Image (cartoon, rainbow, N blue to C red; front, side, top):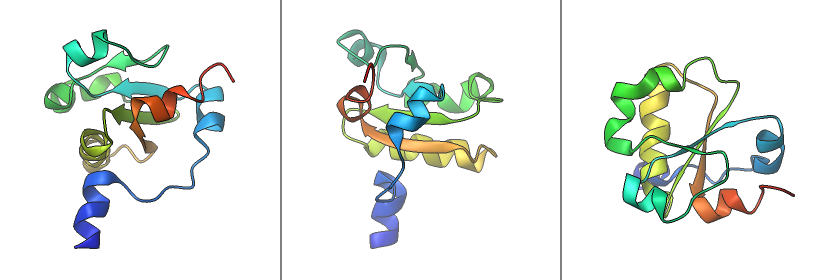
Length: 105
């Protein structure tokens, strides 16, 4: 059961999001366009989860990618999609507010 939850929500990461952001991580909000329009992280791009597979090229060649959403569930799925397609530099940032707290620090 834990493995299933880990795949959906991501592992309990000890990743330094602040350092990754400072190093120029590609910030991807996987929520719907409507959710994105209501507020997001400065500098983030919106690639809704249901469009991610068809827009993989936007993520290729990035040093690091941080995916996030409303709760962390969709970003966990996004991380899995990206990793299944050969991108190994992906971090599940969880809720967008979690990532946002590290912007402009």
